[in-house]
Image (cartoon, rainbow, N blue to C red; front, side, top):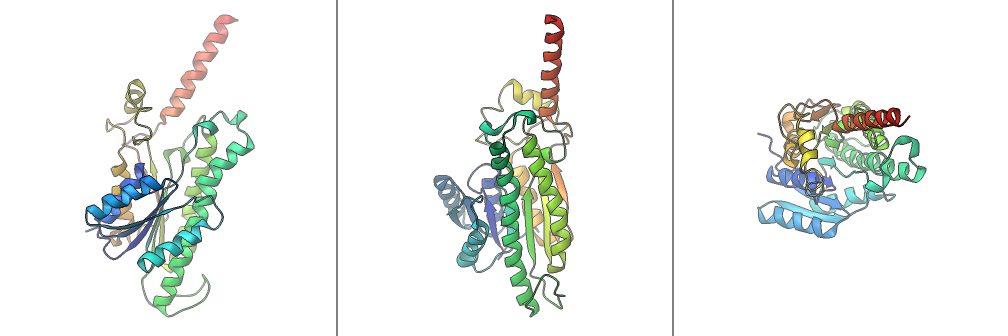
Amino acid sequence: MFSLDSKVAIVTGGGSGIGRSISERLATAGACVLLTGRNEAELEETTATIRHAGGTAAWRVTDITASGSGEETVAAAVADFGRLDILVNNAGSADPADIGPLIDIREDQWDRVVNLNLKANFFMAQAAARQLRRQTLAVAGLEGRFGDKLEGGRRGGAIIQISSRSGSQPNPMTGHYGASKAGIENLVATMAVEWGHLNIRVNAIAPGVVVTDANRDFMSGPRAQKQIETVPLGRLGKPDDIAALCVYLASDEADWVSGSVIQVTGGSRLPMGYLAYLHKIQKASREDARDG
């Protein structure tokens, strides 16, 4: 069950955090995995871990915001493993230097966040879809455009976008990040419709607060407890919580799942950032009233 034997996957941002866990779980399920990212040491270490456990993996230093990087990454996966079956578009973030209230966000801050989380992810998905189309049409004995009617074959593939709870809820101080994730979720629906006849399934996972090595110190102590108080299951997320769902969505068991955005939040529907922002505004209003 949930076997990925003989499948080939690309995981962007695959060397650390959630991406590392996704890479390792896909490999454990049998996939050959190409890890991409900007940190060579992390990519090399994760690849070595996968190989030591008996899996198959390769790595490639890639900046997905660079023009043409999507096509180059897909070509590298095909060169390494012969074809492509799965793309997990995990890379994305908002640098602390680009965080702030929307009224103060500069154009360069907007561009950095939206280019990484929306534009680059779209063109990576597009490059993967073009490769999956070529493979699917070849299996069906067809050559042509996206409108070709398939007469046989089931090659297809799976594209999984990593969105965020921020894509569907208020996201004070990182509103441009939330907007980019909302764009991803809309694209997932459209991709699923446009590419479904090619047996390409497109879905998104929207995590809540997940503790990784990068944010562990920040998410410790009282802040963590405040976050936990908003989660019905009583804990913050782990990278493996997201990775396990990726394995399912990439597998043949999810053959009729497409166009979905799946929330993985421990049952939490109220963002801590929203609460914290409201408390901040309320405190400032009380202080203004007192000073006045």
